[in-house]
Length: 363
Image 1 (cartoon, one colour):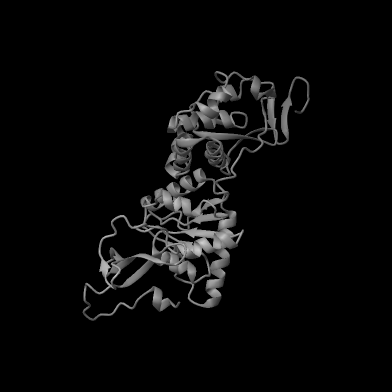
Image 2 (cartoon, helix red, strand yellow):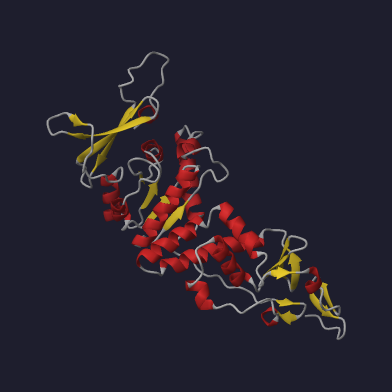
């Protein structure tokens, strides 16, 4: 396969609008042709199936619609215990990854066309890496696919957003555009593998240990910042809303984060005292909360599991994380006034802890 096969020449001459730009064969696990996706000028697509007499029927009817490259996926999963399947949006993107010797697939129809039988095809895959297009449908598609695969029990599912700041529909082909030589493609391959390894495995996210700091020399657990947290409610009774996420965040991080309402500043307990959070600890805590939400969701059963997984994945979107933090800052576990922070005039915050001016003891 060459670049010419993947990216047909665009000439200035007149073209027959009925002449296809490309055809993509969809086959079963053993290589038998089921149907084709046909691309026409202007990014128009149609689907057709063999009529059994050497012609085509331009309607699929009840024809099975498997994943692209089903035969290669089936063989890899059957024979390679470490196989990684790269799920992209569109056949051209799959071909681009094949130039890097990666096993790639897509579902027919593009974003938001994932079907239960696609999940069935990948449920035995050792690892699936999803590369979303940089737009709202593409990212929703990635979240949906991840939720379906996690529900099916795939042990390693990762989402790698190659264009995290973009919303223009950029895809993996755009990311790979500078890689034109074999050496550059080898570098791109290595970088994709590195990005996948660095992305969290959504099937293994879990709780991390937390410190229990003190506020002005008093154990934070003894300070009355509001009603006690019901751990059972935390895990199983929180509403799947932004407010529910905020209350969960407050319960998760009440022992190491505070929000000073008057100053609109987050504080973090570090090196024995409360410090202004100047390196994004509260943002990392927000990510941790939705990650642990996902980890708990995976332990649930049936439709509840799928519903909570989807909510947890949606909660990873930047606007949802920001709303969670905005609401959490006024929760009683975290909200703090300047007066309360300086409630004890005999306690002095120092570089290496807190000093009791009455006793001279450093804590």
